[in-house]
Length: 233
Image (cartoon, rainbow, N blue to C red):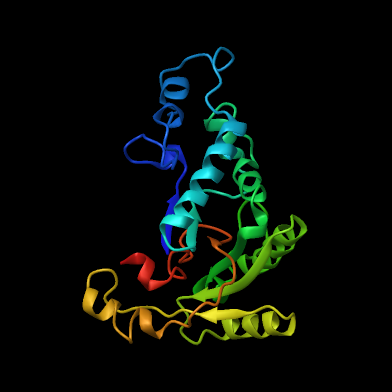
């Protein structure tokens, strides 16, 4: 099994896109178009159709390389990514989700949410709703697009009362949920992290499909935590 973090090009410290295409011709950067000040009307910096074609093909290739299971975590929003469309001329706000829709029968989505954000009723600034409500909104949207939403993972769980209430709400709705716990000494105490009291304490997430997409309402919610330990070795 394998893990790929598909980060946005403009988030890359090196300025190069984290892109899985084998052909270097398509590993383009927004640098020439955006940062050198070239007129965007003269040059399109992104080919959506080519991205969907190449990314989907290479994701399937990675599945075969990793024994039939691949875990993906995307940088930025999966849909309605208007920041990306502003920064990279030609990029459509729904390009990433369109790519996943091209192989949706093989995709399963896991949504992560930080228990501390539930407890303090953290609100999405762009939507004005709490993160726990956004989890339910995201589930409805993904399902309306034909995706299987397998479960919700509550990360950094430490018996927060509101997190318990949210989990009960999920159960009442027939939604499977799992608990992942804070790990003392993370990320430096490797021996403890990989022990039964570290990653081993987290509830194992059952998945059925070859592509598992881990997403969340916002940043810093522990999206990488639900990925299986063997894939991180």
